[in-house]
Length: 363
Image: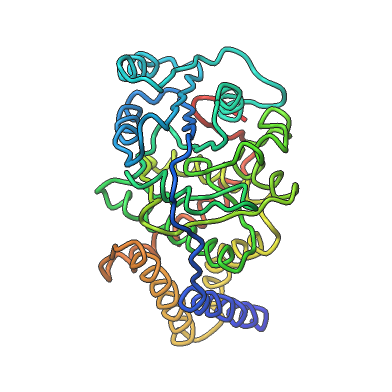
């Protein structure tokens, strides 16, 4: 029981500090964009017939000079109508190119392989990456460029999910909460990771590591290249701002969510030790709390659960407020129940001796 008490003291201390940092240590890492450099937008697509047109329409609606955009879409051996839809959309749009991917390059596989091919075709000094199931805001390019300076090689935007189902709303809160935790460290100039669906790399930084084809393959290719670029001495910026808030299609069902999170958990072991330790601390909360209910008085156990809910809800409220969004009080409670169920199931699922399924392939 003493071990459980020590755990809860550590948990509340850590998250109390994180909450204070979120409140008082917000740094603005942006500068005004005074010119409009040519940029490449790189999109890997595999079997995305239900999402690709919304993605491309968002790109076509960007508040950025169209003549300064070079959009490259890599069709990764899609077996549906993805390629046909892309080619029909870009038919009368100069600056858009669809590239079929038929072979692997170096150590790259899957999405990393597609991006390696696209980067070889790119002609600009700035690469912006997004996914085929993502809709970026009109302000995306300008806002991402505002995070650059001479030392920065990686700029990371913000992504969450669309949808009106309760399941979609819980996923949305989960994304924003997790990214909010990472942002606290980023504001302290402590690197965490990037997100491949909302990422900017300078050509110089990308080529310094030899591209995706010359780094060890990882199913989380964004974390892999982020770590390699930082090892070369480049800086990073993470932006938690509505101007870079992109929208992803949600996991359609619980099985898909587990596959997505298992892949992310595989990549989390390559995060810095302090971020990995934080996620372990957070994930252990329910496995520690539930046995504690049977050892301590109900009043003490419920008090601990309520304090956690209040801390988490306040943190989430601040994150949403920064994006000019809000949630009802009952959504915060349901989010707690969502985390309770998902934590236990995901821990069990992660340790099952099965491969990760991703875009119809197994890794």
